[in-house]
Image (cartoon, one colour):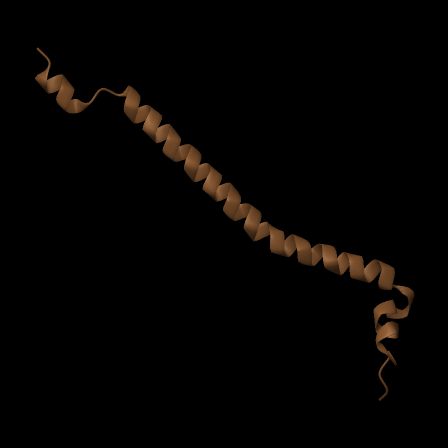
Length: 71
Protein backbone atom coordinates (compact mmCIF):
# COMPACT_ATOMS: atom_id res chain seq x y z
CA UNK A 1 0.00 0.00 0.00
CA UNK A 2 1.46 3.35 -1.01
CA UNK A 3 0.94 6.45 1.14
CA UNK A 4 -1.51 9.03 -0.10
CA UNK A 5 1.06 11.77 0.32
CA UNK A 6 4.34 11.38 -1.53
CA UNK A 7 6.16 14.21 0.23
CA UNK A 8 5.74 16.68 3.07
CA UNK A 9 4.47 19.46 0.80
CA UNK A 10 1.68 17.19 -0.42
CA UNK A 11 0.86 16.35 3.19
CA UNK A 12 0.61 20.06 4.06
CA UNK A 13 -1.56 20.67 1.00
CA UNK A 14 -4.00 17.97 2.19
CA UNK A 15 -5.27 17.37 -1.30
CA UNK A 16 -6.12 21.05 -1.73
CA UNK A 17 -7.86 21.37 1.65
CA UNK A 18 -4.75 22.47 3.56
CA UNK A 19 -5.77 26.16 3.71
CA UNK A 20 -8.91 25.07 5.59
CA UNK A 21 -7.51 22.21 7.66
CA UNK A 22 -4.41 23.84 9.19
CA UNK A 23 -5.95 27.11 10.41
CA UNK A 24 -8.84 25.12 11.90
CA UNK A 25 -6.41 22.81 13.65
CA UNK A 26 -4.31 25.72 14.90
CA UNK A 27 -7.31 27.63 16.23
CA UNK A 28 -8.60 24.54 18.02
CA UNK A 29 -5.20 23.93 19.61
CA UNK A 30 -5.00 27.58 20.70
CA UNK A 31 -8.42 27.46 22.31
CA UNK A 32 -7.62 24.21 24.10
CA UNK A 33 -4.45 25.79 25.49
CA UNK A 34 -6.03 29.11 26.48
CA UNK A 35 -9.17 27.77 28.14
CA UNK A 36 -7.52 26.36 31.31
CA UNK A 37 -5.37 29.48 31.63
CA UNK A 38 -8.36 31.80 31.39
CA UNK A 39 -10.36 29.67 33.82
CA UNK A 40 -7.53 29.76 36.37
CA UNK A 41 -7.26 33.53 35.98
CA UNK A 42 -11.00 33.98 36.50
CA UNK A 43 -10.91 31.73 39.58
CA UNK A 44 -8.12 33.84 41.11
CA UNK A 45 -10.11 37.01 40.42
CA UNK A 46 -13.24 35.61 42.04
CA UNK A 47 -11.35 34.41 45.11
CA UNK A 48 -9.74 37.83 45.43
CA UNK A 49 -13.15 39.53 45.25
CA UNK A 50 -14.64 37.17 47.83
CA UNK A 51 -11.75 37.73 50.26
CA UNK A 52 -12.10 41.49 49.82
CA UNK A 53 -15.84 41.30 50.51
CA UNK A 54 -15.22 39.23 53.62
CA UNK A 55 -12.73 41.82 54.93
CA UNK A 56 -15.18 44.65 54.25
CA UNK A 57 -18.04 42.79 55.92
CA UNK A 58 -15.88 41.91 58.92
CA UNK A 59 -14.79 45.53 59.29
CA UNK A 60 -18.39 46.74 59.29
CA UNK A 61 -19.56 44.25 61.93
CA UNK A 62 -18.99 45.18 65.55
CA UNK A 63 -16.56 42.93 67.36
CA UNK A 64 -18.37 40.57 69.80
CA UNK A 65 -16.00 41.40 72.67
CA UNK A 66 -16.51 45.12 72.16
CA UNK A 67 -20.21 44.72 72.96
CA UNK A 68 -19.49 42.75 76.13
CA UNK A 69 -17.12 45.41 77.54
CA UNK A 70 -19.22 48.43 76.55
CA UNK A 71 -20.63 50.39 79.57
